[in-house]
Length: 153
Picture 1 (cartoon, rainbow, N blue to C red):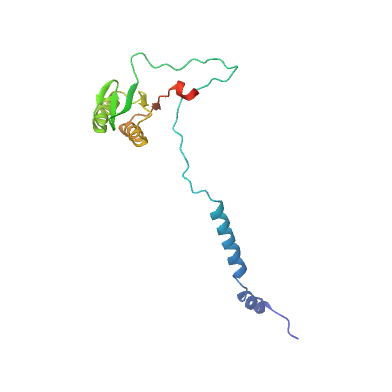
Picture 2: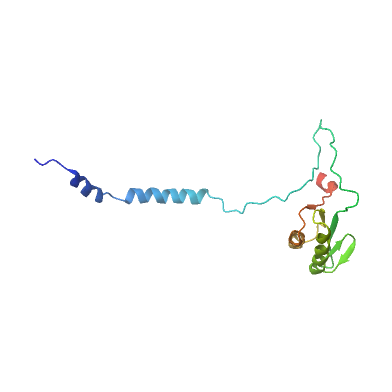
């Protein structure tokens, strides 16, 4: 009688069936595809808006801006099917004119906060374009204004 040796084990290993391993791999693949979420993760824009004060808290002093620096206020409205922009009360006809004024303002002081006051009827695309132009020109602090009376409803 012959005793099985090392060479016999190697020959048996070549005959191992790969079908169960492939089945397991496909089952794992199907599991991960079924449980995956294919939604884009929303990024929250930074905001300092606090609509309600919790009961039992006291008011803390708010940081105030230096006396000589005023925030840049960009109002975006919608009239007759077209958007309009106002930069600190001065009307701008298009995004290029707004961008030119913002470039001049960022040259003076880039740390000045920009407050975007966007009317509710303005399409989201114009609001995003305005935000992008403020970021591209070099402003580091961009805030959105909020109507507190609408938030309570």
